[in-house]
Length: 437
Image 1: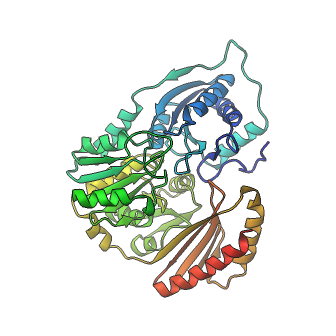
Image 2: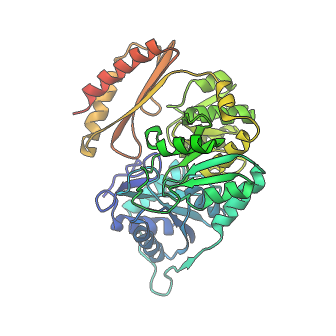
C-alpha cells in the first residue's frame, strides 16, 4: 500500500482528506500497528467532525493487537502528549491547522515528544507487514479517561504563576476552547474568549491562525484595551499573538521574544526561521521543519528552548511537546510585567515575505525535480538542502520547500532591507512559476 522510507509520515504525523488519503481502514491499520508496539495507549482528538469516527477505528485496530486504549475525549494535543507520560504512547486524532475536511494522527512518546524518525519507520514497517491479531480471549479493551485536561492546566498554573494581564484569546472553535481560557483565568488574568465553542466546521475562522484570519481578535484587543491577544490553531499546539496596539506578532518574533526573555543560551529552530535569532542568541541550531525535529535536536544538544515560525514552541523543562496553551500563559505573564509592544521594539527587525502555492498531490515528484534543478543553478553564497532548498546571500536568504502536511510549495524570503527583499522575492516567484505545472 505505502512504501517504507517515511512515505506516510509528513513533518507532523499522518494526515489527509478524510475518505480519500486518510481512510477509516488506514486508521484501523495504524491502531493495530501501534497496538502491536505498546500494550497501553492514551487517545485524544480535536474538534473535527470525523474525530469520533477515526478514534473508534484506532481503538478497534489497537484491540485487534491486544492493546488497551484509554480515551481522553476532546482535548488539545499538548494535553494528550502530557498524558502519554503514564502510558506506552499517545495517539492524537488531529490535522492541526489543516482545513476541516482533513484529519490524521500524531503519535507521542511518554516524554512528551512526537515519535522520532526510528519510531515512525517502525510504524510504517508494521503497516507494510501486519502481524496476526490476538485471538478472542486476548483482544484489547477500551476505557474512558478523565482528568487529563485539569492536570495539564494545574501544571501550567504552578509553573508560570500569577498574571494580572487583560487577555483576549481566540480558540478558533478548536481543542483549546476550554483549557486556554480557564488556564488564563486561574492565573488571575481578565479573559475574553472568541470562537470558544467546539465546532469541527470551524465557522469563526480557519484552523490556521494566520494574520488575515485574526481581524476579530485585533478589533477585540483594541476595543477592550487588552494587554495581549492570543490565538490557537485547531489542536492547540500553536500560539500566535496580537500586541496591545492590535499588531499581529508572527512566530519568528515570538521565538526571539521567548528566547530573549528566558535568557536562553541557545535555540533550536528550523530552516525557515528568521535570522533575527542569530542576532540575539549565542547559538542557533538549525533543523528540518517540524516539531518532531525540533524536539530531536533539543534532546541531542541539551539546549533550553526551541520553536518554529508557525507558532510552535517547545520548553523542554516542561515537555518536549509544542504547547500553545503553555506559550500563551507565559506570554500573558510577560505582558503583565512589560508591554508586548515595548518588548518587541527592543528586538531587531527584518522584512520578510511568506507564501504558499498549492499543486495536485500526484505532481509532487515532478515539482520536486524541477525545484531541485532550479535551486541548484542559483548563484548564492551557500545552498542548504537539509529540508527543501535555502539559498543564503550576504544580506538575506530564501527558502523553497515542499510542505510536510499538504500538497503545497512553501516559500520564505528575508532580507536586511526592502530592496533586497524584493530582489530575492522576484527570484523565488520566477522559480515557483517554472516548477508548478
